[in-house]
Length: 267
Image 1 (cartoon, rainbow, N blue to C red):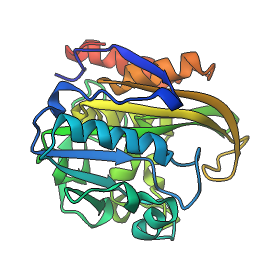
Image 2: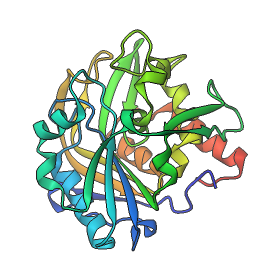
Image 3: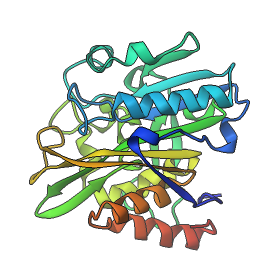
Image 4: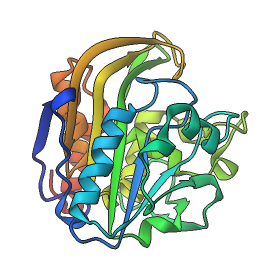
């Protein structure tokens, strides 16, 4: 299936957020969590520890004995371990949780199952995605502007951090410039149909919204919002976060929904 069967989205005030994991997390042996922690910058550039802590606690309740792997690939010269210390992530982890740098993991080639691939017929990402029982993406709600057009990032765009910089770098070794050509909204279609559809759950941290008048993803302003969104389908969760947050509805969400229908998936 290239679309999630359950498109229901839950919304809570940040201070009342108690994460209810998807069914795949219950009694799982291994769970992968991909949080937006690619920069040594506080929320909303990155996810808040309050929201991430609630997600980890919810997963631990659902599966007390699971190995929970927090996987991220940075977009900065600063290492993942340094970024984690900067944010205080270490304090949230129990003995069954482990932080892994996506750039250091063995890779697998994932076929792009879109009926209309944009650029990549396949994409390389950690093989670990195929070796776990449940996958959760935890993104921040952010809006930047590229070539005068708004780009809203949430749980799907968060998956960029799973792609190896060594393979997808362009001018800068610290970023994934190849994933910006011909445009991020178009490449996000390839991202979804290569690895995005594998994810069993999505969370969007909207406690603070990020706004940048230009392309810079780490130097903008924070706007109080106070909401958290979650569900099984990243596309539905991102759509609801944009609608409630009065953000421009990303064109890639409609494009992916249309392609899922063509491929026989569900919205």
